[in-house]
Length: 580
Ligand code: PEP
Ligand code: MG
Image 1 (cartoon, protein in one colour):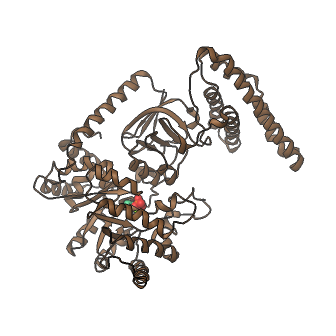
Image 2 (cartoon, rainbow, N blue to C red):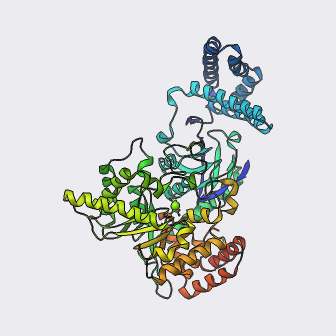
């Protein structure tokens, strides 16, 4: 058994079989063999080794002919390994005496070798570990043949373990089969983490290198509350976590009874709880949890799932679905926020040195006006179907907001000329997620219809800490007094000018901050649908006066740690069953 600490990004506990990605999606199908299958399976193993040797021989010959013997030497090393007696004996022993499947035995044995190389410092050693992974892949490919499974085709429950996943890869996971997610890299505010939370599956990121310690088919526990994972847990540990799962299930059942009740404080102030979505189908989840609308529709996910840019029609279809499903409830469509970690594939580090400070979001949209206009036209067309509003992301200057509005005006003109109906009075707001927007808030109030605070980005830009980097994750926290001051400033200026302001970053879905945010003056939160019942439970347990007292106390504290400790204590008083 091995317990590892990472960063908790999506709550809950999952217990199950590991599926390791990065192995070209190989799925080790079963761990144990029936007793009478041993001889047959050994034969299969020998066949796979022989095929792998033949492949490497072929490669070596080809490379030697084309590039010379010195380049072919790498394959000689692979061959040496594939023919190594000790390796064969070790694997055969696992199959004979422990009745492990050949796939599992190969993976276990080779990962043990790779780990030894990884533990030795230096680039040369790291490359040798990669060679071993290569050999593992080759043998597995020969063993699994056509039964190799791709991630999207997984059809039985697994826990997905990967070095990294893009937000769109994560979005493609089917929560019916992918019960949890762990990555070696990634930080607390990464979009992969946010999408995992949206899927409602427990997730831990930033664990560091551990994939060599685990084989596909191993039992793993993901504790998304504490940010821990347990590899090959003993029975006692499994029993402990099963008990926790039961407790969480009974809390969820209890919270379900709040579904039809308003998120109203004990002194009668109604807090608006809206849902965050990435895809139209998530509307259903929002409705199930009693969301009063959609406060953040991350429309850029439409671009992430496909190779070509979506057409105006595919934009419109998606927006119409959401608008119609929500009826007269508000739907805030955030215009495309591509770039940084939301790319179609993993960003090439050479492309942009600081992608979060680069050409992302509204900046990208303003540079690609045709693309932007297509989206705006689709949103405008959908605006006749419900209470649709438009929100621009990452606005950092007044001019940017004005330019975005000009593109919107062009799109309106297009539709007018074509005689297509749209809501001429559509409300246009902006995200407050860059410190410059907070600082210039008194000017922005003159131009915008509403604000929504995006804490995920505001934290990273306020504290100069990359939201997706595990190595600075300790600094990335909404509890930092500087972040809280920024929020305080934004809320008080907006309120003074009577411009509606809400919050849609992850902070607003964390019950630990609910009282503080109400105390600061916020009355509208847009959150991951799964978090709505818990946040509602807090709203219904406290008075605004109590919350104002909490905000007052927090303003006097000077470190994130002090603030967290205080807020946890206060939350436990009103919501003792909440797993902190
Ligand atoms: C935010 O930055 O807080 C936000 C809600 O947007 P995203 O997480 O998509 O950047
Ligand atoms: Mg953002």
